[in-house]
Image (tube, rainbow, N blue to C red; front, side, top):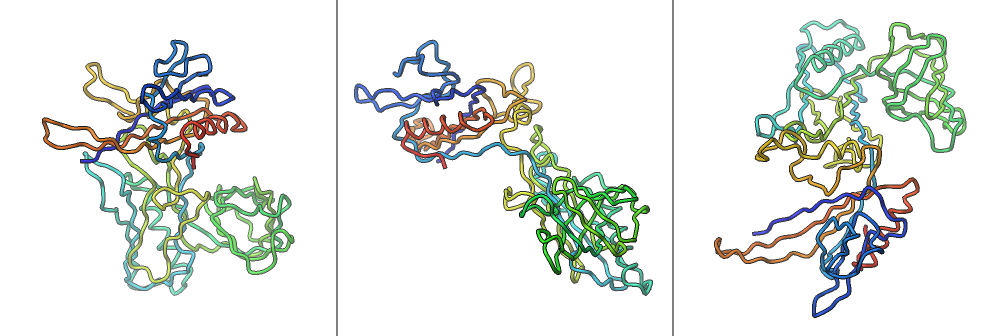
Length: 397
């Protein structure tokens, strides 16, 4: 039988020279042992008996038993943004259109919820005769149904498209409209967010980009001016000149985030969105970051002190059960909610322990997870990782 044993610790203050890591001298036929402490080990004794002035946070482990080490710097959570309908759908009379939304990691009454919820609308037997109107009607009803539901964790917005010319980028050669960026229309002053864009000619760097921009979450769509107006971006300092009216194109489905809350009985990971009954429209994933979880857009927070603090388990009075947090997330100290941390996983070679009563053997794989405080330039992190590599012979990947 194989088991994996995780031991976790946190260092809220890193020594600049990497002195949180120490290596004992191999003596008496025993191997050299690595020990990791919450303070500077240079004040202690490099032996199996750790000096009283050193705060050891994990049991020492043989340096020659380390298989590999991985690291992951802190990252804030990123909301999943999905577009539905970039390919224009032609509505068919009496056709039933369905959007499916679920979360394969969400749990309900102890069981994983595997069946998505269907949000459907059947087009009328007699259409309006105007394709754009029929399409708008379908998307409007579906968005209302999705947003009225209390069982999903997403918000649906109508997605509109509009032609633009004179697209410029006054910041850099790489900056351009980014998903979720807020734009402001001149004169009207209304705001909206970018879902995506396509370029048919020119470039932003050349200040002559033309194409189509997809927008959602309007502050007052009724005040949109169909005249040629400038849309000014925020972080990218874009200027986009429009010369066409808005046309409903599809839906933007924005996840509510909070992918890994401290209560483990609720959702886990980003939502899944599918469809049924459509001929052209489909779901497209828009990544606002290169990182994904389980191959899906939407990033859990990593190493955010306030988020790590939520993972600490809170037990009832007799210590038999916990009310919230992660029961396996027991650290030597509380995370500092004002700091960010780099995660370091040290994987040791499996060890074998005889279980006489069970009549079998248990092979245990130990993984030591250490959350180390990040300084602004990651200088102390680099020193810690270098010391760990020097003592184990394995460079953190």
